[in-house]
Length: 57
Image 1 (cartoon, rainbow, N blue to C red):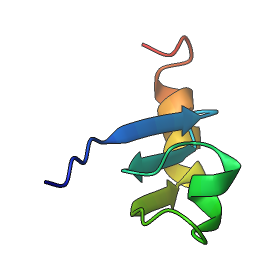
Image 2: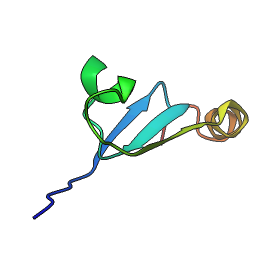
Image 3: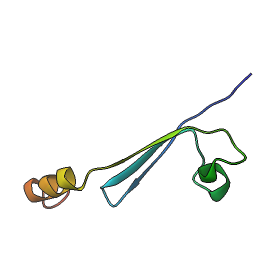
Image 4: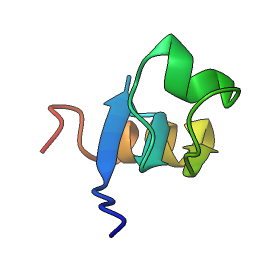
């Protein structure tokens, strides 16, 4: 049986990582653990949202 559970991390409202990888050196290197993850970076969207919602609402 394979047990996969997802994890997520948002950094500075601009970076996001979603996947099955643990947020540690061993999982992120990909040399020992078999993991999958997706990362995204979208500073323009964040800047526009901060202008429209200056208090982060």
